Structures are given as structure tokens and as C-alpha cells.
Image 1 (cartoon, helix red, strand yellow):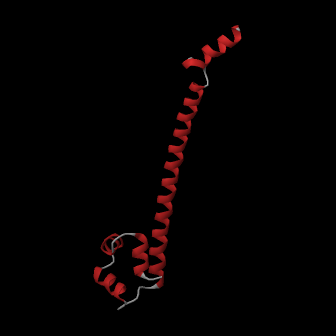
Image 2: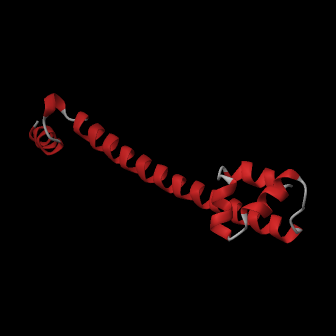
Image 3: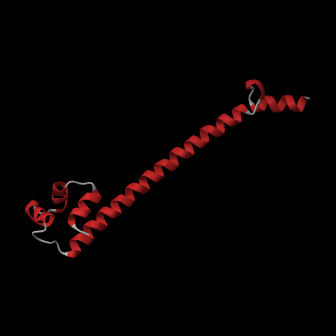
Length: 101
């Protein structure tokens, strides 16, 4: 894995990565062009940080989707309960008519 692979996978511009982690832009350019190589621990740390961020973003999106799906299921359930009664009556009215018959 190279610094360019990490930058591409993160979707964050190299300039922003430099600002965020205090890496001189000249150093980043040297890494990107292959003039210099970052220490392996730097590559591992950056990869781990961005992997964790991607995982957290995915988890947050999944939680939001789960909440949205639960709300939609609640709405559908309420619609189905309303539809089970005859002629737009409430379920209580329908049940009392059934009991009287």
C-alpha cells in the first residue's frame, strides 16, 4: 500500500490530510512522487484511521436506514390496521358490530 492508495481510498485531498495530521505538503509531494517513502508505521496509521472512519460512517448509515425502515414498518402497520375494518370503520366499531350480530 502506498500513500497514493490511501489518499485515493479515503477520498480526501492530500492537502487536507496534510493539514489534519501536520504533515508538511513538501513531504507529502515527495511521498506521492516516490522521491521519498513514508515509514511503514505512517502508512499503517493513516490506513487504520481512514478504515475506522469508513466503518463508523457505514455503521451510522446503517443505523439511520434501520431507523427509517422501522418508521416505515410502523406506518405500514398502522395502514394495515385501518384497512382491516369494513367501510372505513374503526376496528372497535367493526368488532362491536360483530359482537352484536
